[in-house]
Image (cartoon, rainbow, N blue to C red):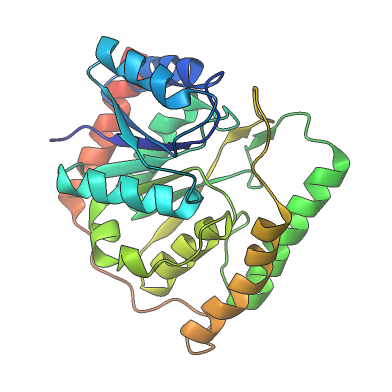
Length: 264
């Protein structure tokens, strides 16, 4: 199998999923999508089941209840690895991540093991986010970088493309973060293990519909989790020895991205 898989956790996102599916299909026609739904009370899972019957590239993984973003992604990653997908894209369901950027993340994996979509590198575009929210986001990124040593401008970003070998190399079930700190922990573990990470400018805007899932408990987890990562790393704030990367996999990622962007 040479198609990428886009993994999208959902909880009460029924008003966004149709547009997301259409957007990914236009930008990256070869991509399959896996929605990991936590028994959304608004019927998101039912909507996705209906859409999956109409589109063989759409898959739905139902979970019994709301268990958090991190557990949803881990379940999706296991699903992808069991089926042999070579590249796994992680993105939000609320359309804050532009489907048009998926091929660019795939192309970036030609020269790296993880492509991290960034809101803050040159070429990125932000929608009308508001000054207060922008300041809070930049402050959170700075906090993470200062404590962990992560050299990325947007370590909290959730729009990523992983090579499957990277996910296989991690002990996914040891990833303990369950809110948005999950994004930091994944980036830290990959960087600390010596894999190559590249940042890619993305187009980011506020959610299309629905309500944000950020809560006080999620923010608290993010605040203390970075200290836990530092301790786990033995207080080492630098990456491990570089890993050898499969050049064939990188070329395959580039070809996939090229084919998808030319047919969009």
